[in-house]
Amino acid sequence: MEQIIIVAVLVTLGYLFGRRAEHKHFKSLIEREQVMNKLPAIASRLPPQDSKYDQVLVSGNVVVANDYFKSFVAGLRNLFGGKISTYESLLDRARREAVLRMKEQAQQLGAELVFNVKYETSNISGQTNKKIPVIEVHAYGTALKKI
Amino acid sequence: MLVSNLEFMTGKKVLKHLGLVQGSSVRAKHAGRDIMSGIKNMFGGELTAYTELLHESREEATERMIQQAQAVGANAVLNVRFSTSSITAGAAEIYVYGTAVVLDNNE
Image (cartoon, rainbow over the protein chains, first blue to last red):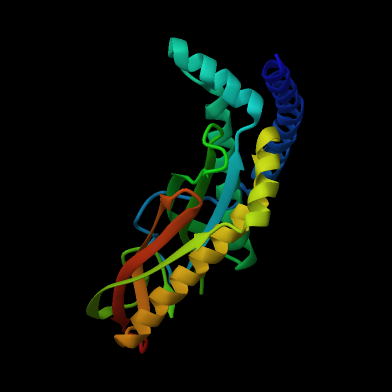
């Protein structure tokens, strides 16, 4: 009985705080992406050959964890199969945040383009809590600055 | 030292290829941070302590790669790639590798 209460409390707390945090994060992501749209990040490997550029490696990383509610829902979903939208939104947020950080670094250098963008995702959950995944997303690319 | 993940440097000729250079760094999480992050885990969101830890770790790995490139007499590292792997619970390895080259700076 006690265990059920503990799980119920954790799920409720996870739901309330997790949802609020996610809403806030999505809002700030959209705002910052609009500002950063003038600095495109491109996955192409060949930079424009028209003029000379300075090349600098830029990167952004972010570590995110799922909240208890989402993990609970995902656990249920595992029984029936199908898409786990709670994880999808987590990874979406993490990727966009990582790219934004990379672009911010490029902007500080005065670059106009970020080329050859690569993503890297890894699971780094420790031994403390195997159930809740901790995910790191790292985005890196080459910032090009006109000389 | 120029570091880039493109395969060449725009407007500069590669005079010599010096082979692969690499750097790695393994870091474990601080116990206190681990506990704090455990609490934060419940509510979701970003774990800033880990973000910083992995960022520092990556910088150290890059620094080691640059040292190795300097040792072989290169002035740039091209086509840099990162890779992360969690070896045991609580520790992650960051590995950076790239091609050390000598660029023509006189142009």
